[in-house]
Length: 136
Image 1 (spheres, rainbow, N blue to C red):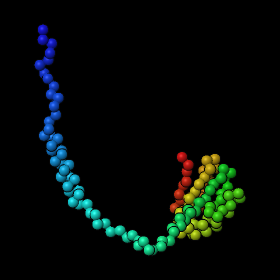
Image 2: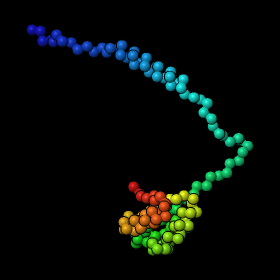
Image 3: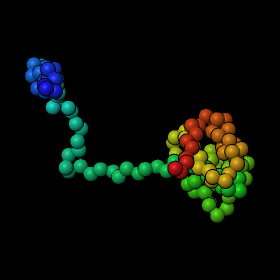
């Protein structure tokens, strides 16, 4: 009463494919090591030189409050938000002072979309790139 099967599954793997793979990897790493260049020029300061500290400029920002009023940062008074018509001149001055043609727009989550769109229209009219700030 022979219950064993005559078909046996071979467990051992073929070593020829493994040696081919190792050989290809060896060639790949040899070529990459030859192509890599360790002589990348670096312009490093001398130890005797003094470096000027880099001052990071603050991006000009218009903040839309929950009451659909605005204030311009930096330099704006956060305790005294103003209507949209009053922010045009300070926004123009802050953007010109920053040297970038960007205006960051930060809005309260309860602010109307129309209030934010007015600032976007101001950016478009002046040729500025609007950057929308949001909180995750």
